[in-house]
Length: 85
Image (cartoon, rainbow, N blue to C red):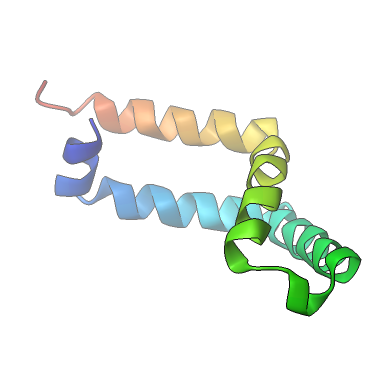
C-alpha cells in the first residue's frame, strides 16, 4: 500500500494534508511548547536532540486530534480504492 501511495503521488499529498490539519488545530504550537518546557527543565546544554525526540514523540502522537486521524484514514482508504492490489 505504501509503495502504491508513493508511486501515484498520494503519499506527498497525504503528508501535506496531515501537516495542514496539524497546523490548523494548533498541534505544532503545542509540541513547540512541550519541547521548550522540557528543554527549560533539563537545561539547554543537558538535552540532546535524540533525548528530546524520545521525550516528545509519544506525547505528540497522543495529542493528534481524533478528527485528524479519522480524516487522514479516510483519505488513505479513498486512495486505496484505486490500488491495483
